[in-house]
Length: 193
Image (cartoon, rainbow, N blue to C red; front, side, top):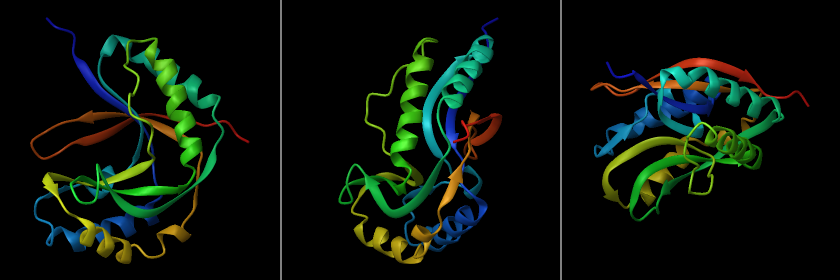
């Protein structure tokens, strides 16, 4: 019988007040952009490291490596800013909110995770780290400049909502026809400054 694998990622969670503001703004836009798959409010997070499928027997070692990466990374202040799109606004496939503060600290944690988890066979990320919250995935590339401007207007005040990041979370991603469910398996404290 084949060993069951679990799909994992490490993320930074966001405060409930920011989650609420983003959720309200996304709900208002859902009807105007029908070709988008919007992220559920409870699934909003900033991915630090996508791990992918891992054999369950390797979980304890992986968890220990995530803890080692976190214990060497100091907590930090974060703040989100303006919306954007990947790869460009004119041919967008993903709409997101970028980090205005804390991006460098998040990048360093992502690099530590990359280095530690490579020892367990997890591939390093090839793209440079870009701290962002994914809001929607588009079914086909579109010009979303107007949508981003509208979203930016709805999120006025987001740049004035800084928060402290004191932990990272190791999640299991459970895929289904209703969309993914993210189950927190372990919350790991960052080093106290």
